[in-house]
Image (cartoon, rainbow, N blue to C red; front, side, top):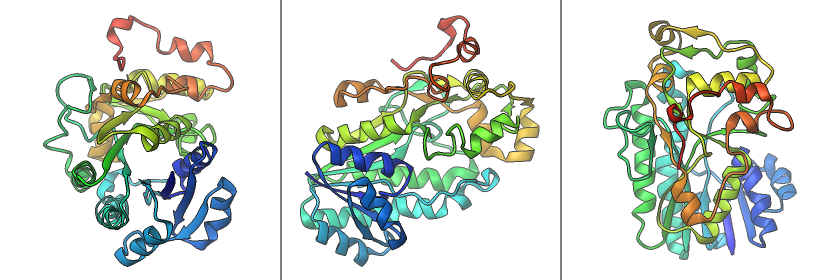
Length: 332
């Protein structure tokens, strides 16, 4: 098929494009700057500069490439985020989730795109009540934290616009937190360095359940969605969501770091803002059962503490999660 990847030079795009090419697809990739053309060509795709917030520019690129499938992986995130001002730091990304989504959908409809695949997020957008592990059918948070409301609205907008596009197979992939090469949670990434320096503490009770996904596994799942996904939402997460109190010490051990510090919720909120305390204490994990069943996909890296360990998993990393398995939430 002819596939247009919007955001081809990003962490996920860089993993996705060569996999699509290897699968025999004709791939075009967009970037904001012609300076990234050589990088996209090296991945095996034809590069196009595109301003995703300009409807005419999007229409031009989509018309020139005439894709069968559009993959929307556009974000505008820097290496460091100010979690106290969550919506402010996500402002451009939220425009990409709303305005750019509209532009890509309109342009795709004009050329008869058969499948439209878009990036969303699993984890904090879902309701913070009920089971520790949520499925795609569970409700989103009706009352998100004030500093995250605009981002929450943008995610909801994207999901409804894409799955509601009756003229195409509108597919939303709710990825877990990315880790691995090219991400901030690589072994040499910014967040890994914070963990090593013990500047990534457990806040409050640490009962927030997080879902992660290795960037290579995310790319493999996206290829599956491009090739045979059906309209709807899929959680693209690893096999074992875990509370912060379990995954963070295990990851620290896998990185060769000391155990994380602990700080009370009031201090975490004062120092880092409400968004951090919500994610540390209240968020729910996500089940990957639907993606396994319907996409025929399964992650090669089932757990983040194994995926970040050098070589094979370290015994110490496994020990950090040892305990009664009945108390550990598992995505099944």
